[in-house]
Image (cartoon, rainbow, N blue to C red; front, side):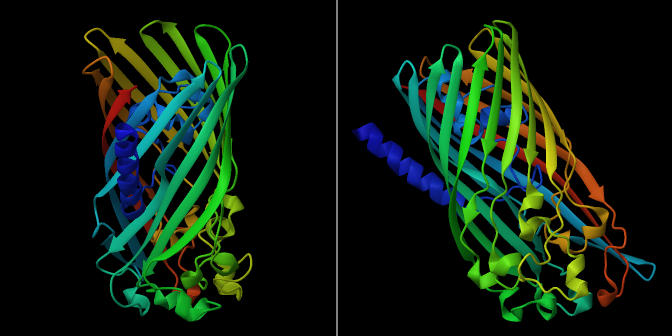
Amino acid sequence: MRNARRLAQLCAALIYGLAVNDAQATNGYFASAYSVKSEGVAGTAIALPQDSLTIATNPAGLLDVPDGFDVGADLFRPDRDATLVQGGQAQTFNGDATSSFVIPSIGYLHHLSSTLAAGIAAFGNGGMDTDYAANPFARFGATGSAGVDLEQLFVAPAIAWAVAPRNEVGLAVNLAYQRFSAKGIGIFGDFSTDPAAVSDRGNDNSYGAGVRLGWLGHLTDNLTIGATWQSKTYMSRFTRYAGLFADQGSFDIPSTYGLGLALTPTARWTVALDWQEIRYADVAAVGDPINALFSGVPLGASDGPGFGWRNVSVIKLGTVVKLPENLTLRAGFSDNRQPIPASQTFFNILAPGVVETHATLGLSWSVSAADEISASYLHAFSRSVYGSGSIPPAFGGGEANISLSENSFGLSWSHRL
């Protein structure tokens, strides 16, 4: 009972930390990985469960992980820039007035029988933060600093069941929380159904739910394949920003699905490959182009203008090598087509989620039979998108260029019960 109480207290503290600190932007605005071990292999996790945070990717993997809990945190450092080019003059703005974020995660699992396991995880699903001390929109009449802060937290209870020999299925219920704020973008109020609900309204909260389904098939002792699907997470509206987001402040979390395989050529070496699709374009506030704004369709309208993001496909490759002396090494690589078309860069000064290529490293050290310490490093290589017809005539024409790179350092503790 004492251990359960301590775990509950720790979980509550970490959930609070997630709710106030989460800010990520790797594959669009979704995190590329949800645990430190997974981050070490670039998020390759559909057929490679390594800890209880498998709930966040493929809950069927719960049956393949020992009982226990995992506690971790990432220090996330993005580098965001925007350049406006008008009348032959270029001016660059840095969006890093807030530059570091601590992102905790926690998971717990317990085998109820040899064919049934249950668990719960709390993790940041994704997010986006920009903070421009010098406002890029000041030349158009905006005042003060500019930026947005979008944070998403999932708390996901889950269950996994071995439905047949070598075949496992899993179900997680995604209980979601979002927090959003925007500042210094009041100029877009001139194009809004509710001009007062576009900018500088403080923090607004949103709640909702969805599901995640997963399957693992152990085809042989050396080859595992997996599949996962996450429904759209239907969220309550951001009422304070009803004049900013399409459909009167609606901001659902997109659906995703993916396939994975893990090959273990030797007892000490595993190679895994994942493919994932993120359906950003299915959420109006994210996927609808901004162009309609300047053709008479205001922000906040039903199926109104948005950030113009495309769907994103991600390929992830990871490898795990177990060495003597209780040491495990990891490495990974992932690549995606970033979601922002060249015509949509002006509004996406606020959300420049354009990185594509990630390289990762990780390691774990078993300090005892029950305890393991893990570390990871992620680098998302700098990517720029140069505008093409991006600044509309209403703002004098020209181009907006946006760029992003990222570094993330992770540390976690796993305890097996």
